[in-house]
Length: 355
Ligand code: IPM
Ligand code: MG
Image (cartoon, rainbow, N blue to C red):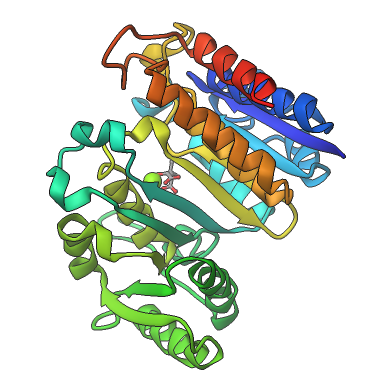
């Protein structure tokens, strides 16, 4: 089959890690007889510098016309340290989410046996942890239109807005994930304080009857923040609003001790975007040392979304093999560290050879 993939490397280490995922996907294409046509799009700080817009219209059109989007990372300290910068790379990300209606962000969190001692948590707490955080991504306080400062500048406000439709759309997806897994859904909110959270809880409670096989648990976000760290193995699928999901998914990402390995998918109405959860790591840009595995595992999620299930599994097997062999970058190497591109080459070759 033939697929058109938008390639948005973005900033920092983005280009070099995305290149490894491209290599791996090309190897998959060669082995399984698919053609992936990659087309480049500008995004992030790089796009601001070149065309003055972190998510240019041409990039948006490319994404709309593609079967999937492979994304690197965006962000540049040049902009972080300048509070008066008019356009910021992050605005491009928020605009992309809104315009492509990327309503659900999926972050699987899974411990890898060989990396367990990298975790800041005790081995016995995290061994076997395997859950998915599903975060609503196009609503809530990130997008409430009523925001700003009072005239004298002494007060500021943001508004958290959710419609039932928005809650139902993302929660359906969460139920579907839970149905394919251990059939447990934890819905996280702050229903003891927030009106939006009460709507979330009520809406999810109404949906529960349609999924009798799923065990649904409602949990307040502060309690959830604690339980994720204390008993990570008890979770299966988590569903929550935009802002809580932002915070909890970062918290969850440290459990495994291998940030450089965590992929994500943002499921859209038009097309979906696949990217590592880590940032643009500007200090390492161009040095060929960043870990490409999170991006490569994101490419595996991309293949899943195209219904190329065996192909996706093959990519995951290749990643497991590279870790078993210790053919990995410095951040997770116990032996000789390998470069970003060497890891990409190794995986591509493993995929093609392993008939
Ligand atoms: C993320 C990031 C973004 C967010 C920032 C960069 C706007 O933290 O993808 O989680 O808050 O959504
Ligand atoms: Mg975040």
